[in-house]
Length: 234
Picture 1: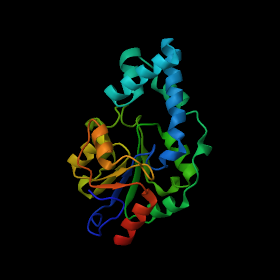
Picture 2: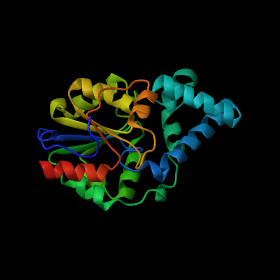
Picture 3: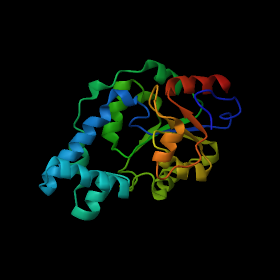
């Protein structure tokens, strides 16, 4: 494991760059995902006719058990995924500031670049466009393309790598959740955990709070700076 510094040998082999979206490509402090989170609570509350506090408990229970709230709602209540995804992603994207430094860093990486998200493609496109980085990606693999099977389920990664013929031994994956890096690491990817800037808890505390943690190769709280270091080392 390393922090934001990189060594030149770690990424020389990488030609496939895979990025989670929420709280990874945009900074955690932008709080964009809080809008989605609140809309999910409201959706569960309206669907099940529950007070918001109880609806939130149901929402988080489904998230922990199924990987996404949507998966739990589909399993137990037959929710239309298109309706859910449209409503929870009806948010204000201006909360995210454009990040030209991140765009330049992604652009300078050799090989293909993908967004791999448990959200939908429209949300990923709007977010990446607001960041000013959309044009630097070859494609977006969303939860719909994964047949609504979210990370960290191995089936989701299998569909991703089969669709794009990804050589995992030449791939790197960036995520804000360690449990979503377990399968990529097993497949041979280089794994990078992205944590919030100036994160107060120690790395050990982050590690211990993640119920399905894996062997992460690198940790950074500055994605653009980390990628600049990678590009300079290649």
